[in-house]
Amino acid sequence: MTATATPLIAAGTLLGGIGLFLLGMTMLTDGLKLAAGRALERILAAWTRTPLHGLVTGVALTALVQSSTAMTVAAIGFVNAGLLDFSSALWVVFGSNLGSSVTGWLVAWLGFAVKADAFALPFIGIGMALQITGSGTRRGALGQAVAGFGVLFLGIELLRQGFTGLGPQALPPLSSDLPGLALAVLIGLGMTVVLQASSATLAVVLTAVAGGSLAVEVGAGVVIGANVGTTLTGILAAIHATSNARRLAAAHVLFNVVTAAAALALLSPLLAAIHHLGVWLTGEGDAVTQLVIFHTAFNLLGVLLMWPLSGPLARFLLARFRSADEDVARAQFLDHNVAAVPALALQALRREMARVGHLALQLASDATRMAPVALPWQPAGAQAASQLTRQLQALEQLQQQVGAFVSDVSRQPLSRDVADQMPELLRIAGYYDTLARVMHQVGQQALRVTHPATVAPTTPEGHPLAALPLAFTAALDFFAAADPKAHDLDQVNTAHAVFDAAYEAAKAAVLRAGAQGLLEVTAAHEWTGLLGDLRRAVEQAHKAAQHLAALPRLKPTPPANGPTGGTPGAE
Image (cartoon, rainbow, N blue to C red; front, side, top):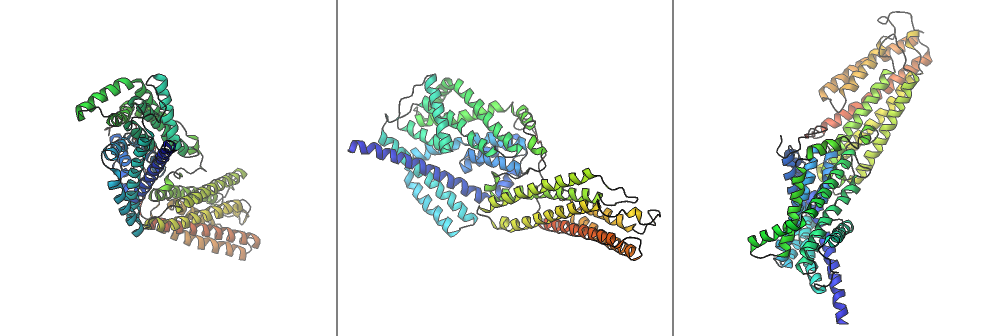
């Protein structure tokens, strides 16, 4: 009975250790992302100017959040939020793979060299105290990360106990020949797909090697498979995402597959060299240290392989996945991956809102040109009306995506500045929505109203409705000034005042023409109604510009293609 119970208890301990490790990793990653907030943005803006900076940043941030998968998904979001150009993000992803090796060193140094519960339990207690006393604040998020750090190493302790209880013969023997290594790679890949964390697979492998259940060569094969398996999360994150998201996911897959193939081909000489290095450093060939060194060397090999290939790779990927960007109805900055970091989600939303405003004002300008902007007036053709309808439909789809994105972000704990700006952005979205709908109506109505040239056979300058085209021309000037991609609030206010004066003059001219019998009363009502709708649209655009100007300024969006020089250190 006892002989049967002991393996069962050990297996339960092993499963519990995996669960605690994953829980601790999740708490650590989520807590640090929330605690970092705008610091991530500042780091990315300051430290990704060159490929080398991007590489170092990827290593450092992954070492901090202890998850290369989270960093890869975050990099996708950073690009879509406009904080990173694609080439810099490429090196952040490469750096995140190298930074994942820090987890192995922490497990080797702290998980096996020190009694884990001696420091894990105090970390959990201190972290939870910070979280309870600072709920919803940066201190609370940091407390969650500290507690997660403790839970993570408590999980490692349980893993070690589980493998000790199972004994060295607990796992089926795997040979170090090619079929055995291929099976080890598949096991590592499968474990990472199931656990959704290559760090968890690495922790399991290290404890198995430390307990004598796995040979170093087999453990190395599992590590290679784990690195390939970690690409699945990036692939899933890029499905139905933006073009840059799919490009980065493809780059991540290529990096890991190419590195895995090279590491398998060089496995024997690599492990032999690492064994001699371990003996030289520590005086003994510790299996755990060898495997950790192999994991680091494996990822460093990938960076060295990608060093000369990054430029052609970036150009190749930038030429692919272009169809989504060409679809105006698809959001270019919003991505569900970045919604998990509210501060970055806010940046993405701000940039998408500027794009929505640009498209809404473009529709407004097109609709205005369907009305008389000069005399004699030539009404637009029927195709202009269908084009205007397509523009409105595209904006409606974008507004739906904005609403869905805001809902995703709202499920996260929000800092005060994010929580304050979110309602303002929704208000601005409402202004642009009303602007687009009203101007669509103006454009359609302009095709049906009485032709001003039929009022009186005089020159355009002496026409009784000469003020009418001036109002529409002033509206055109205002819509150009109010474009969020280029507007200055002083210019917007000036253009608004000019339009107000032109509107009043045009309205007075229409009423006067109707009163003098130069324009039918029905036509006069149509023109005053159309002018009133135009003024309402201008007011919506003016409010949107004022509210946008009141928000904190955004950092400039990086160039679309960014540097493609390829090698770290290239300016």
